[in-house]
Length: 242
Image (cartoon, rainbow, N blue to C red; front, side, top):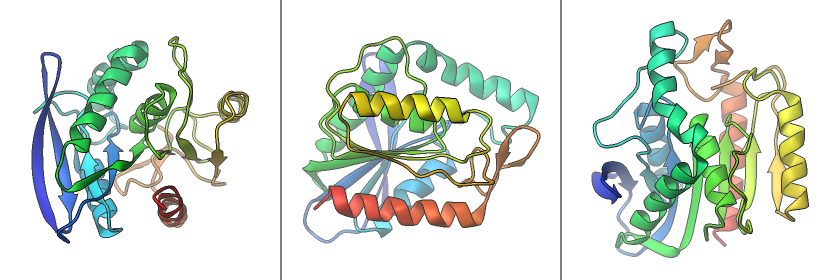
């Protein structure tokens, strides 16, 4: 596997993506991987490597800026405060979020390893919100996957959504209550989107992250749900990249 860091720019903000792929000598479909609220750390980079092992180009995007990272251990008060402060500007300003994630899309399309006509995106937690906003921005991507992500929209109107949408929440996720899931399903249905929601019973937030182990905070790794989610992700990507 070839690993590289890629510098790219959004306005005055320098960003650094994490590129992973197996070199076969020809361009491949690409999967943007959007990080959780701690920044472009191990979870997102491993996601890019997972995409590479599926036969795609994985690109872990940078939403915060080159060298800007939050903290692991999101159940700790200090870590939650730091990570929340990094995430908050994007939650509050969805236009900013859309610009930043679309910048990553533009950057990955310029890479020689990438078939620019075949790009999808997946994201964890905050990153799930990011890829849903990518779809809501009307971006020309084949599909987006929200992995225990936040569904609630912001105050920016949606463009026509052309991407297929797959969402993978845990039923017991305190950050995504069932009424938020239903509201999202209604939003997607009214927008005539090809959408799927696979809900995992007995499963909390951050269930694909092996470091998540705080029931009181609502973040708990669950291997069986993670394995099911990654099988669904593989099937979805194979479908949208046909």
